[in-house]
Image 1: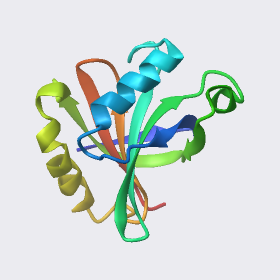
Image 2: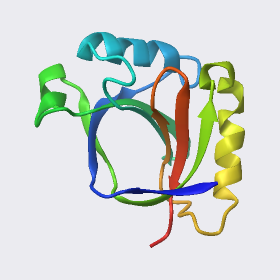
Image 3: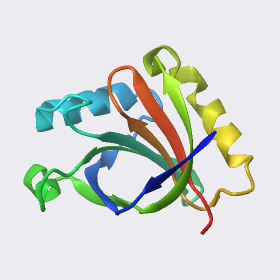
Image 4: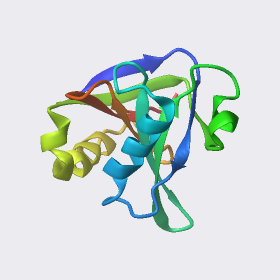
Length: 136
């Protein structure tokens, strides 16, 4: 497990995946088609958190310019700046069933803030990072 710092807030846009976890791939395909940028050309994130007693998952793309979320008529969110605990996952597309176990490992660490969302950062088609914000 490593530490990672987002020095600034990251402005993202996207939408909740109502068929989580089954619809995650289709949701990102829709985002990529809309933006025209593949992973690597733009940062993509998955954000999951409990809201009203149920898990909510968002498929998100990083904004490249102000008000891009409004251009596509998508919800705008922010990934908070700060320190995160991370685990890198290589060949993530072959390991989608194990991602929950990676997050379970991270949240066992006493340094994480369990009230913050779990974040998947899709670096490219092969690499992703699982992140949970640390207590400051």
